[in-house]
Length: 388
Image 1 (tube, rainbow, N blue to C red):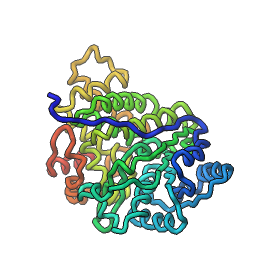
Image 2 (cartoon, rainbow, N blue to C red):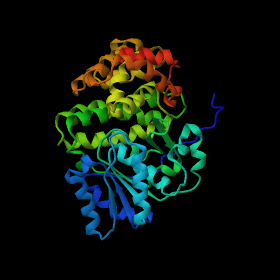
Image 3 (cartoon, one colour):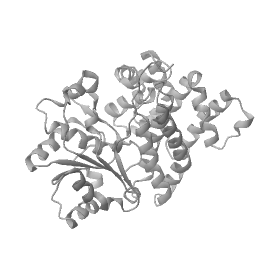
Image 4 (cartoon, rainbow, N blue to C red):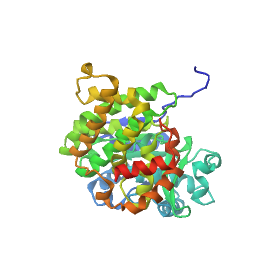
């Protein structure tokens, strides 16, 4: 026991609270950024959020550029185009503003702006981390959704058209120097996106908890993150102006990403190809696949899943751990339905005949390698079929 050496670290400085976005100029000064590139998406650009952030910079006299063409599932061209603007404008730092897509592109842009090779060279599975050998310009993350937790993560997930799949770019140098969590910036998020991104946070917490790697700090964070999602996701979905619910979901999302430095599991391997091939929101894809994965994992994850039962108000004193764990899977399915997500990949544009091809891509994804129960490609196909 304890023969393996483990390292624990939670270094990102987080600024949280209503109006926290006004701390952005201070964060830029503290990190030495004089000319930031704000990376965001067209949907957010059409809301008052971007103007709020740029207004804060105007008031502080901070010159900046804006790239607002990030796709819902970010693609290689997003990084290439924003890196070109970054270099042309003489930027020296990136501000990711939006959901996980914008934050992931902001991370990748500071690397590609200083790297001469193609983005595919930087894929983690292909040894890309060894090519990211120096510190890059600072990254500041301002999330406007509560799911991915990219604001405290060290990875960027981008669809590479060169490789025809999502790639993970991973390095400690990609961790944002500051994360600014302002619940007021999430108020305008529509109910469906609130639900989908919230299930992303839930899946992060649950898969990191069940991941067999040793990290007791992450386990504790994951458990409380799960409690927050169970308590506040339905409220945030029903009433987008519930600041208490919005703020706690932001915290839960951040906790999920801190926790999954342990790693993830099979639900994420199933979800990634669904986003690449059919454009499903990542959190939605997780929600659609998670119940089947939980049933698959149940023999090895009974103790972990039993922890969910009291969060849902179940009378655990009357149950065995196995009964509590099995009941918890039903409670998770019930929560998914109550927040407005229709069960079944068939209802979200995924044809049954695609499942075989998807299972191959899911097996290529590294996340299932740390699933609590080992998966074959045939297992992943069965999980797709059960989720269909």
